[in-house]
Image (cartoon, rainbow, N blue to C red; front, side, top):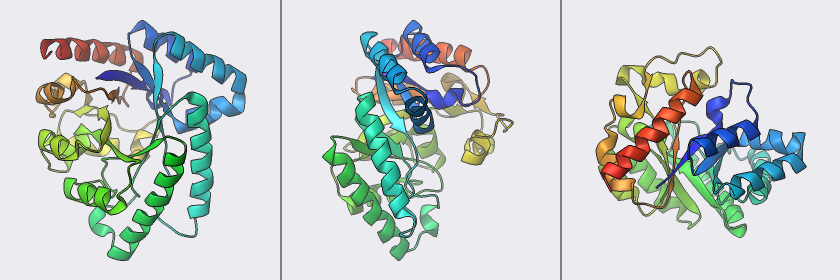
Amino acid sequence: MKLSLCTITFRHQLISFAQLVQFAHRHHFDGIELWGTHAQHLYDHDRVEMEEQVRLVRDQGMSISMLSDYLDIATSSGFQRTLEKAKRLISLANLLHVKQIRTFAGQKASQEVGPEERARYVYHLQILCKMCQEHGIQLLVETHPNTLTDSLSSTLALLQEVNHPALKVNLDFLHIWESGADPIDAYEQLRPWVAHYHLKNISSSDHLPVFAPHNVYAPNGDREGMVLLGEGVVDYGPILEKIADTDYFASIEWFGQSPQRVLAEEVEWLRKAMMVRA
């Protein structure tokens, strides 16, 4: 398993991409998961500099593991804008030598989505998957609350409904645990589609709302309950036994304070934990 940091961790810090590359290299990360907003900013600000930084990433033995964004699949009327955004993301992915784009399967809980609406989501995902496949890119849906992948059963059903080889899963172990599923059982059932992992933890289920997008993206949002991987309610020991030998990236997803200190501690903890289980 390879380890990457998420640039979204630094969404509220004044830190350059070059500094993030240096930090990742210094702490022996294998890659960087680049937030789509950051990627677009790099491109708009200075494409030449972006390409230089990408070369630096590769020269140091790392890679951009995934481009993470959101593609709206909810409405037919707004889907043209989604297609235009998808084209931009695919173009950025090609420039960055990225083979994976992460999105969410809508913005409503699966139980609140009726058959007709679900069919529309599926159809839109099929179109996006075809676009991605034409450029050698996988489209990853993340297991996440208030989406069609908010439960194991709905996720498995969606994968069968879309039925496209470009559709894969970014398995967020905390959120799959939050859904009530056993993380190991969920991993085994989703394994044919899993292509990336997100790792984070929480001190108690009472604090799970801190990961709601409106809170996470707020500079002054609540951070209570966000803890290190080895200190939360999700037991990562058995999970690492299952995934340590896989060839996928696992991104350490940290939204709390002191990101550089925490990421340095987390990557060291993960390396040691994987060595113990090797």
